[in-house]
Length: 393
Image (cartoon, rainbow, N blue to C red; front, side):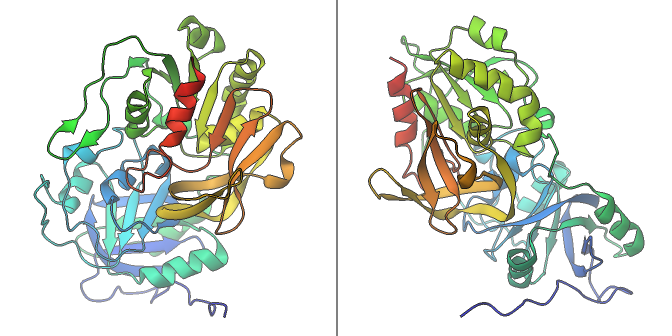
């Protein structure tokens, strides 16, 4: 039975309800009141939802969420606090978040502080008390809307002005955000994956295949997993030239995740990837990197209706029918129907059949739409890092 059409996330346009110190204003004029926390001010972005039950700190520091307001479908967010070890990147990520329940005092032996203060220190706005189920159903039905999230202790907001900001924001389609979140210089990556009670592993200094990782907004755990799989990693900015990449003498090139429209970022990245393919350099792409690998091989990409975001997405591996439970965060996808003869589809989503993996025929190049490094999420897909490093010889 199909879900009934959800009511808009709307409330009175005039005086806010008693105790309201935050508001979400959608581009269509819908207004939802709540209690603000974190940074005081307002921010504009696309409202999406994430279905993970854990890992809110990793989500909020994932650069792929740049320009987005994350609605957490799990109601209890913030209850384990925050800590320095769970930060995925120190660049702009999500501009704000929406949660059902108010943030409570943290209760976890790893906690170093509370979620609300941590958000405030990073200029990110939180909003609690909304009907996140209704908002999620609205996104599923009508697509991800543009909106403004705002927080002020006195509860006074200029709704007309906020609606205007939401309506005039151009949205993520056509937007290159990799430039905003990519590192500015090259870095020799140090450190492996995290273990309870031990922290992050140290990078071994033995002779290893050298991977050049192009940073379009990468999560640090990707680099840690490349090290775990047996690689030595140098991370370079998104706009690194082919000549600079080749001068580093890579055994392989990794294309990272990141935010925004792959076609926009691809204007400068795809020509580099295409020339790497012509030289038969081994390539592995994740998320945005996967999409740009598809573009370089002749496929097209498009904006999704609602996107896929969470730590519980089933993906079918077409070679043997194995189903991997994966972590995802993407609002664009490679179009299945656009795949040319030179691309093999390797994985598909069991939610909607969208493309989740490709391999370039005759080349040592492949990509996946999901996040095999997890953080947060399952670890079913670590084998992909081993597959890539195994190609390097």
